[in-house]
Image (cartoon, rainbow, N blue to C red; front, side, top):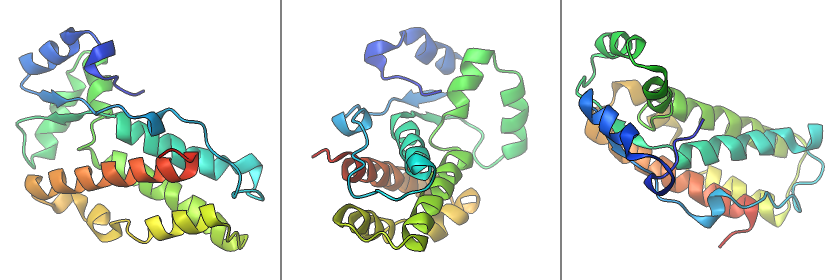
Length: 176
């Protein structure tokens, strides 16, 4: 589930999150977030390109997800307890938070699978090479060590990941 931008979402979600000490920063919309996958250049992927579809879905969800800032810092135990007490609609919003490590791990896993298939099948089209070049900039080490980063570094990394996801979507949809 993706949290939509404020233009299409009731402000009550934002107000309710604020009441429980959470601020929300909605993601900016862009054409590449809704464009169809350009499959030319990715022919030959198994399962009708399911790995590409999953990577695109993960990148879209991440790019469209908001940033929710709470007051728990690195106290993950307290945050987990707090999450169990949230009403369902607030819990859903919190699950889609760009600051959650699970959000980053999903992108990493799906992109890795897609890249592995490009390599195994030796797909070297212009589009595949553009994806490989972009993937070479993926911040693997920072994503793996994400939970131990200070909040300032997490904020920097999630913005970098947002840019990465949007660029990946531009490449695989042919959007410019």
